[in-house]
Image 1 (cartoon, rainbow, N blue to C red):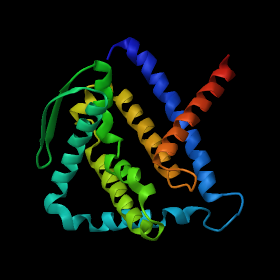
Image 2: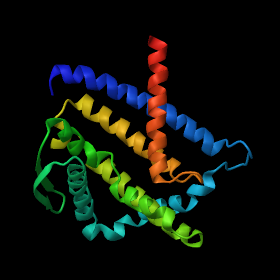
Image 3: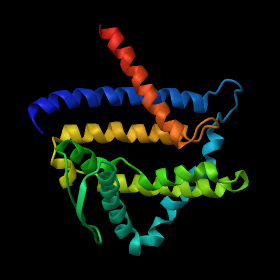
Length: 226
């Protein structure tokens, strides 16, 4: 990555991370201190069964140890593929083994950044489940939310165990850039997932909500410095 790109993208990513932190504060306030009405637990109850699924997976993950490493590697490489397809990159090969894998694609150098770093911040299984969540009947929603929680815990563990300086995906760019990108993207995805549970939202409107929040924050920042 050229110095010119670093001078442009690193400040931009820093701004985006700050905007995501700003949005996170607003989301936390809406969850814990809703008005009206005020309750002891706020709006935490909407995440109850998702939390159950996340905790259950974390505690029982060891029972799946024979195949879980392969599945985590598979999801890592699959994320490369999904983002490559979204960005119209040509896919040449795909391999997922026990703890190691490889995907080969070709296309724009700019889009390569998104493809390379996606597995460390994009929970594809969670987004897939949230895509169908509005179609689930209310009396079965708690079971579905347990599955969402399992997917969240799965991806969280993947991110934790797979992210590091040893990863070629990460160290092919300046490390500060890579980790700044991952932090900003992770926070964006977390905010979107939290908002998608709100009664007036779903994963699509939550995504737009997050984008609008960033845009409003950007315009406010520009107005302060001009």
